[in-house]
Amino acid sequence: MPTFPSYPDVNATYTDSLTGVTYKYDGSTWLVQYTVDPVLVTPTPILTDVPVGPVTGTPSHTTVLLGDGTWGTYTTGGGTLDLSSTLTGFSSMTGTVTASDSILTALEKLNGNVNQVVFSASISYTHTQVSAQNTWAITHNLNKYPSVTVIDSFMNTVIGEIVYNNSNTLTITFTASFSGTAYLT
Image (cartoon, rainbow, N blue to C red; front, side, top):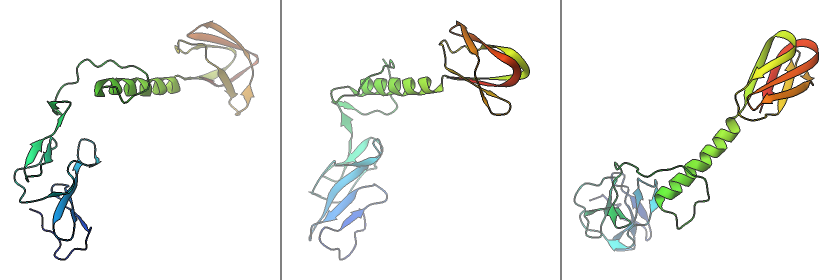
């Protein structure tokens, strides 16, 4: 049982540092307000205005404090929450998460959306031409026809004739030989 302040003000709150349970004083009795759900890591209303007696048992990440002062098993969707269960049937996809989605479908959509942004933002290639040449043959393996920016060794932008050989190679021809860098995105 937590040790409450001796003379609290009405509506004073107290959070037990061991259990994460928050209590509110109504002027005569300490009432359970909410517990911190470690699965969601946010205060989650579980019980409200329930008079408390001695708390028995040991809390864990799968339990909630019941009105009789004991710890009950946290359940969701009619089944017991088991954080050690293997995620089965997962298939990454893109889409908008809706309120009617199952947790698995929401995770699949979030994973697909994040991957789409990460992969599209990271598809680039930098080619460094060390020896001065007027023709640069570049193998980029991006599987696309990228835009190209060429900077010479003096940090000037240089324009050349770009020929896309296929979706993974290109050739740039310049009017003069020089060394520099080609940025493909």
